[in-house]
Amino acid sequence: MTPFEVIFMCTLGILAYFLIYGIIYKSDVKSYFNCDKQLNKTEFGNSFAAASTSLATVLFFFITLGLENGLYILISPLSYLIGILLFNKTILPKLQKYDYANINKSNAISVGNTLGLFMGERYNSRLIRMMISFITIIGIVSILLIELYVGVDIFNIFIKTEYKEIALILISIVAFTYTGLGGLNTVVKTDKLQFWFMFIVASVIIIWLFMQKPTITIKDFFPTPMPLTKGLLLEWPLLFNMIFVNILLIPSMLRNWQLISATRDYSEVSKGLMRGFYLTATISALFIVLGILFFKIFPHTQVSLNGILISMASSEDFIVSYIFLPLLFMACLMALLSTVDSSLLPVVQSISTDFIKSNGGRKRYLQITFVMLIITLGLYWIVFKIMGFNLIEWLYTIFSLVTISSPAIILGCLGNENILRKKVIKMTVVFATIVGLFLALLISYIGNKMGNVWLIQLNTPVATLISSLWIVTTYKLKTHKQC
Image (cartoon, rainbow, N blue to C red; front, side, top):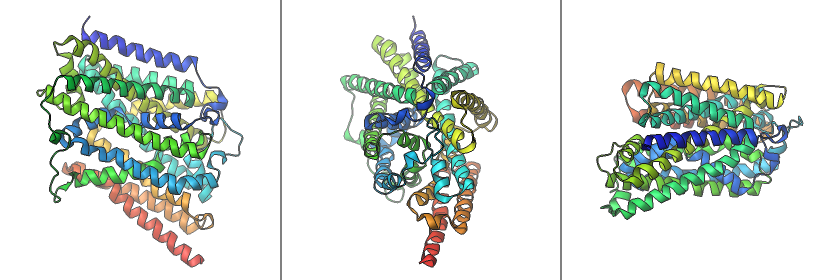
């Protein structure tokens, strides 16, 4: 049996396991989205980390960027900490005060509560509810596409390029099926398995790499800082994008709001977010170190995740090709599945709550999941086949657009309800958010035309700053007039 045949069998085994898990341990309709409100800090933290340590960002993005920037690339998960501390200090107390977890008075316990529903209540605006839901759904669907893009790419090591869409369809069907059947209960349980499998595999491979006694220095992990004219540890556009987007990402991610609604109390939410940060930072650091060590020991390896897999497959060392390669590949697959299910379920919940008036139960959720499967596969074909986007262009063009909604969300949480419901504030929130969205897309378009990645990286930060100033200024003026 060849290493590729071992990988193939392991892949089928993992996909079969998750599919069977979703079928056997499917949620009943009353706990489909809320786990009977029994999530604790450990489950919250594991799910947050599993969703954050995606195949694209950690196992692909960090392995390659870590080689160039060392552990300075940890600025990305560290900026999560700033966002989490701000969220816990300012927004979370407001959610407790406004009883966010129980704001849905329709008795539709299986639907639970969503960001869109909460914003609609705060602004007393159906338009704002749908606008924020739509933008945040776009952001999550973009994550799905990114994950599938990288996920399909890793199958190139043993599937011919012209047949890799078979892997795309198979993975998508399995992930969407067990998520659609199992609901949040299944997603949370599998998140724990997925995260700890990645953690153990990365740790074992790193220990083995250190045992090879690579010629390594402190500069490999902490390169000489670049001059301030170019950046601060990282290039300025990349640094600004990472810090700005990751801080604003916490309040705009539907996944976080779904977990908050399903958690038993708000202190568990605060502790769960912090636990999620620690786990995310740890697994990120592990894969950065893994990449740096691997390229030191195998210097001729192509600088990519695929390059690592191919190099391991061609190794004459039995342990590398028959043990570490299948383990790493399975860790990649776990990362892919954990992000897909964590991204999909909040979308199903948001559509069920924010766009569909009647609660159709499990049958309706399965129907929505099936429609999302078709839409996701269709968008994948349009974005990467017809429009010709590559991973980096799509990542910076669309993914961060979700944070365009953050100023409206933050104001909706912290603002005075009487002022939020004024017509001028509601219209400002709508127009400023829409203008910010189109401005970000315009900057991305110009950057793509010029082939300027720096400009693309600045699209959302610049657009969000402008929309934020517009929204905050209008709110302050209205508050002053009210006084």
